[in-house]
Length: 96
Picture 1 (spheres, rainbow, N blue to C red):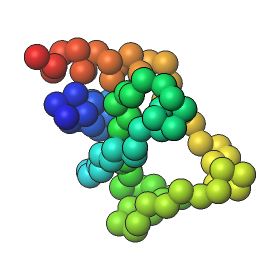
Picture 2: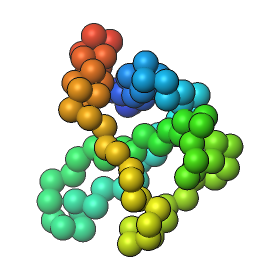
Picture 3: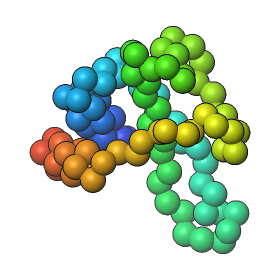
Picture 4: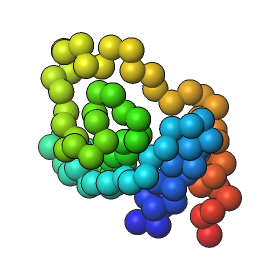
């Protein structure tokens, strides 16, 4: 859980430097689907965060998962390679 807590802080820190303020996050163990596939178990945690200025998932309202085939995900941008490096660096600097 320490890794999850530090990863959450890293996400908030890195995106915060870009002007994306994420005041709250939720961490959720969404199950271990490897069990259904007869594969080794692994840690599977989702970190949900929402920017205060979010348009699609309005801050303060319940998070929902739209149909993957809808237009909801159009124009979404994944973390950049630099974002990922910055998050990894933050974790490396804060894990002990």
